[in-house]
Image 1 (cartoon, rainbow, N blue to C red):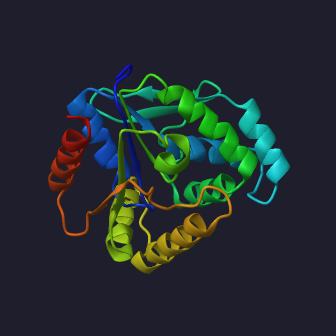
Image 2 (tube, one colour):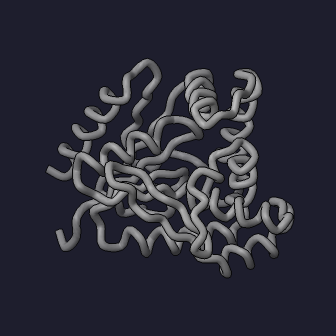
Length: 225
């Protein structure tokens, strides 16, 4: 093999993709790439300019013009920068997440960010997670995993994440947002959320983080030796 393997992890919102991908990258000594953070970064910039997901031409122009940079954090994770300004903590809100989902449905926006993601992963040795990594961004990845969990479990996780950041929201509100995101991501016209034909399905409901990590490492070993 001329390069180290690419590991693509897809799944719906709050399925644990980011946590698992960070830990797998750390265990293997690979680079972690949070593709969702790139769409959130674009949403942050769009919100600053008063743009919505309905302003497709303006959003596409913004995606072409701004510079999004992900900087690895020792131990896992990415610091996120837009035009040199760090916004790592500012992009993890329900509002930014919803706008990111809307913007990600715009073909020209996806085309631009997909190109950026492919460039980042070209040399291999990466763990990239998102919603279309195995089907669109890295269709030739050596390892493809579709990670999911029940809507209730994902809503519980997302609520805990928001609470850890100082935002207390009603569980039913988070569950409704999870279901809306699922419907939008799975039914959008371009690059809908779906498992690749050769992806391994992994349901993390009721599993600990370490149990999921071990299962993923087993899959990597089986696929890559």
